[in-house]
Length: 400
Image (cartoon, rainbow, N blue to C red; front, top):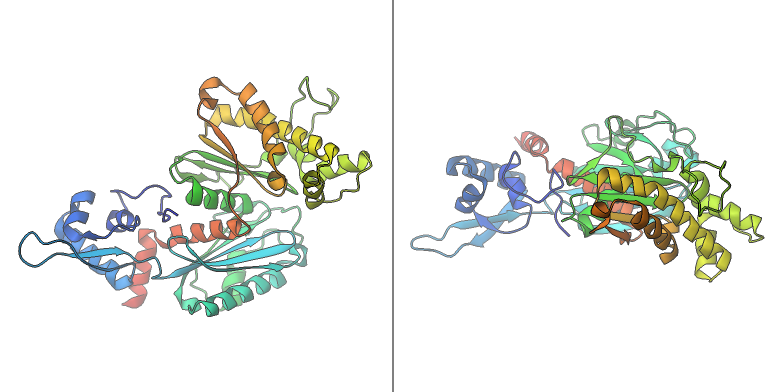
């Protein structure tokens, strides 16, 4: 895995200076750092000493000598601190403790009901986080930041959910403050985002770090998207970017819907929508998981309905591809994991209706992340914040 940089891009010269450069894990001398960053040797030496004091850099042996005393090398130390990532779904919560490079040290998934409200849900997952930290021998004092993904719209700047449809009791709740109060850690940085954004972060950092422009689509109980452009997650002015499920899908000549049936994507291509169509056909499906089970069992009706859902998703994505021009479109979520049928429907329409220049090298691929993907993405969000220059400065200030 590529260590997460504060900007989410390959490390190099710039405001991050020596630390941003060193996030690639390669040991270097102070002279090499000065050469690569363009900073003076005195500036680099002072900055490296600070980073060594914070533990973010660590001694890494000596370089070959060209005469005289061999110069000392330093390297990024990803275990200087840890981060906690939490992914909340409608009926589960996954918690991961990771190092600063996004390496998972420990993870666990627990059953819960998001409709129980913020206090009991957060108490449960934070208790699990505490147990995981104990298991890897790290106290809460070692946690540089905590990232949390929620299954609904989130105003990222404040960490407050806004009118989340499946989260009664969560609207406008100050989630970061609740987490800090529950832990008794008022200075802990708590970052909150919607679940698709953290999935996009995790998928991009883990599998597609060289792809600057990635569009992640989650097809499950709802439909949403995470947008990585120029190597950076795009949230929009208020955090609402990527709300793919509420885009109205135009009627197409090959659509089984009547011409007057122009509905939002979520109403015709989500797991519950497919399940409803299956029930109309006499198949007892209630949930997204039921749809997946019937597809894997080879039910022809379920397979065709999932493929048609892919075509409907593709009808919306064709416009996205024309407008944003991503190099990778990743399809994830419960229905996305049903097999190749959803993906085939998406590809069929996107490659037919998008501009040739936009699709010439476009990859439309299934998500590669496992059940920890959302929690990992939340942890990467936390790690990027923790490695920002101002965050490192605060570590040093607390140690003075």
